Image 1 (tube, rainbow, N blue to C red):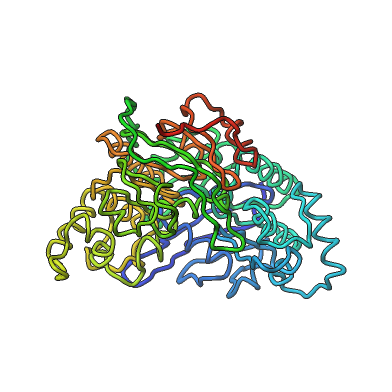
Image 2 (image 1 turned 120 degrees about the horizontal axis):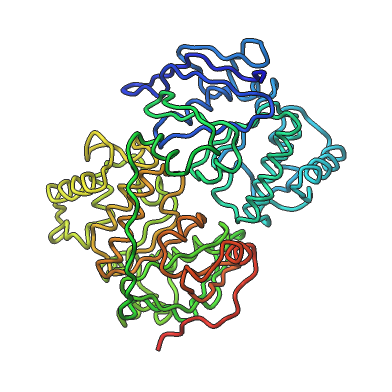
Length: 506
C-alpha cells in the first residue's frame, strides 16, 4: 500500500497543555482512515495542522512524497487537501452557487460554475440545484453543498469532521455511498466521528488518540464499538443497567402548542399535543431545522405562548418566562452549550448563579450568596467528573465534553420536575456521553420526566422509553421505543409526518 500523507513526530503545545505529542501515522490513497479519541484527545489540533490552520511545533508531514507544511487552508487546498467541517460555513440568504463560489480559491463565472455544480453533484449522488437558497435547504442538503465545494477542487485527501451528526439514516447511506465512490477513485478520507458503528462499517483503518498521543491503531471491522470506545478512554466502559419503566401521573401537558418561528429560515410549531408522565424519558427525533430550537424555546420560556398551551402539574405557564418556569420545576439545557447554555467569559461559579439562583436559593433579598454558589458548582464538578482546575475557570476554557457535563449536571442537580435537553451528547466522547445518558436516566428513575431532543438515533433508542418524531414543526404521537424500527424513524425524520392521534390530556 503506497502512502499519500505521512505524519511523523507531530507536536503542538499551548500554555498549560500539550495538544499533540509525537503523533505519527500515514494515510494511503483511497483509504478511509478513522481518527478516534475523546474530547480533548487532540483530534481537532491534528487536523488543523494538516489543513494549514495551525503550525506544528515539531515533526514533519509528507504529501505525495514531498515535504508538506501549509501555512493556511489555501495552501492545503492547492495541494489537494480539503475539509468539511462539523459546523457549516454557509450564508442562508445566498444561493448554492453563490456560497460555493465564495469558498473556491479561483474565480469561476456563474455560467460555468452552475453546470459544474449540477454535474459533480449528480455524479457523486448528491444532487443540488445551484439556484436554490441555502435557507430553503435541509441540513443534509447543506452538507452536500460543503462536500460539492470540496469536490470541485479535485481533492486527494478529504477530511470530514462528524459528518453524520445531523443526518437521517437514509442520508447517512447516501453519504457513505459517495465516500465509497471517492475512495474507489483513489481519494483518501480522514474521517472523524464518535459514532463507532459507522466507523466499523465505513473505515479501513483507525488511529486512536488519547491525551494527545497515538495509543492504538486497528482495523475497525475487526473490533466492536465497545472495544473501540475502551481504547479511546483507556478503561472498561460500564454498560447501562436495564430500565424498569413504570410511568406515573401526567406532569407536563402540551395542548395544540403553536409558535411562529422568529427566524425567516426557521420552522414554526404546529398544534403539538402531548402528555409527559412521571418517570418517562421521551425521545424526540428529527433532522435539525424541523422545529427543535422553537420547541425548546417554547418549553423553556424564551418564547411565550398562550397560557393553557403548556401546563405543569396542572398549572398553566405558557405565558411565563424562564425564571418562573424554573421556579415551578421546568428546566431546559439548549443545544448551543457555549453562548446559550453558558456565558463563555464567565466562570463556572458565575454560570451556576445565572442558572441555579432561583431553585437553589442562591440569593436573599437580592444579595447573592457566592459561598453557596461556589459550593454548588463544586458539587456539580465532582458529581459529573468535570475536568477543570476549579470553579473559577471560564466556561470557554473547558473542552466541549467537559462543559457539556457541567451544563447537564447543573440542571440535573437542581431536581427538576421536567428537564428538556437538546442534543445532550453532540460532539461528546463515549465516556462523557455515557455519563450524561446515565444521569438523565437516573433523574427519570427518581420520578422526574425528561425530554431528549436529538439527531442521534442510537442515543434515543438506548435511553428513551417513548419516541416521537418532529418533522415540519409537527410532533408525532409518542410510541414505545421498542415498537419502532430505525428505517421507520428515518423515513418520518425525512419528512413523512405521523397522522395517528397524539395522547390527548384528559
